[in-house]
Length: 94
Image 1 (cartoon, rainbow, N blue to C red):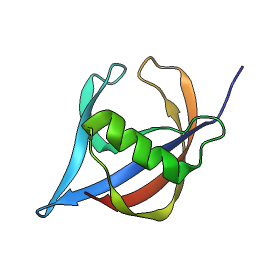
Image 2: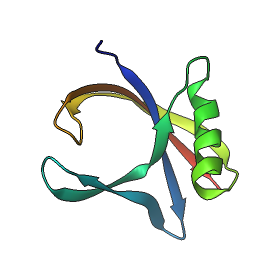
Image 3: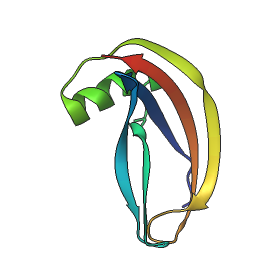
Image 4: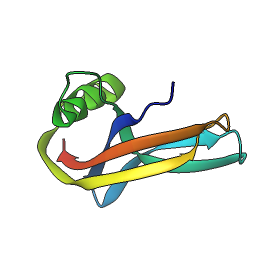
């Protein structure tokens, strides 16, 4: 069954630098970089996902979480399968 995956991306800046993660695209055989993020679980608000994801990935708490907007993306995933995401974009600070 096809589903739409809700996710968050968190724009984190520190000392004038943007914190990103490296991701490898198996289909295009390329490395790209994106802000940290994760999937929103059923029953979880997107802003709560921001806090949970950063704790899970970095073991750090964030403050001043603010929504920037939302993007919709239809693409081929890393295995070449069609994918559809609703991406909530936030800023936050350590």
